[in-house]
Length: 97
Length: 222
Image (cartoon, rainbow over all chains, first blue to last red; front, top):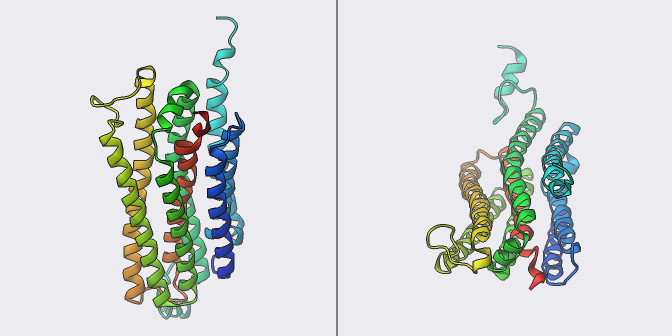
């Protein structure tokens, strides 16, 4: 329910985790992990965004309809990236034509 | 007048087509989320373009990305996350009917948003001085001259669109501050603060992705 009052300690905890993750992502960026650098940077960003959506934006306490709308937007964005990149990333594979 | 309708007029902030404030709050929250989905579509297209070009010209994107100031980018990320905290606490204050705290927290959110935009302006200024703005005055190492301009075009487009959202968010916060001050916002009718908060947090999330994509990825390569 939107009227759910979230205790402030939840907000402070999420804030602390977000700040630690920001420091972590900057630190990792300067290490040479090869392709893992990109995965780590995006993984941490997705984790941070999820915390913001669930707690700061109260989706954790929202109706199922809100959940469906939120997940729908993520799913749509996934289709956009997956289908487009399945074209661009595989163009070099062509062996005929 | 029906007894039910008469009852409605006794509840400030409740529109006549809703049964209760709870139902109204649920509807406004859902409506705001539907709007935010269109915002995901809006920014999503740009993130897609960025992904495609980054895969086409990885060398140029790494070289151009190194010209951005990680320190300022990190500070701005922290500033924005802190503004999301003050916004979340503002919603909390509104729900409890703490008018003074609500006004202070909205003010803090606005100040932090202003600091973000100030730091962003300094970064833009540096880019102009360094001739890293795409166009006739653009200067970059020869190998990446053309493709680095694509990176900087996307940098200005994406951070510029984000900054525009911040400016709009600043205006919404000012509006909410006036509503908190004149007593429109009450313990029962707090949903304007709630959905303004949803907008503010969404803009924060966009930056959570822009920061690693523009500033960090490829940083280790030099």
